[in-house]
Image (cartoon, rainbow, N blue to C red; front, side):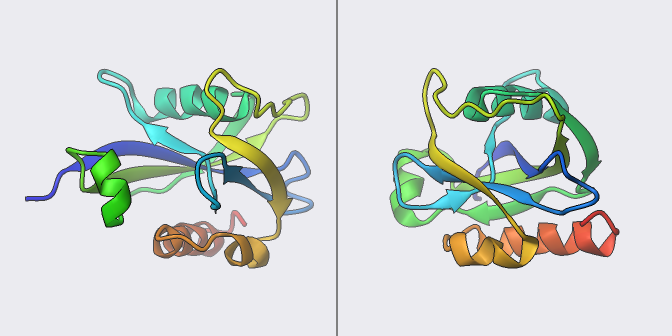
Length: 152
């Protein structure tokens, strides 16, 4: 039986939303990969609490407005190399949130334990020009859901 780590992930829209849809992606410090901010849910923590904590830890701000959340949890398996590092977990089960940065929010990647070294805002159509990893299928499901629901 596979074991999945509970996790939250954020699709972050720029403060220009809804007039302009620009989605935040960040480049990891440890591998050459772009992704959405995400992180584990601590014991006793709600997904929303974990979301705000993870955003503060990873991008230096939790100044966001939660617009929507994906109703179901999505799972993915780690590639072998990552699975070894993440033992005893075989993958992650994620709750996705769609959030908008508040106008006064200041992104700061120079956090206590930096996970990202660069970031940019891209159009929904450009995301997969950057995201090349095993996370692509989940990202497609989430982006399609928020598009179908009329958010992006």
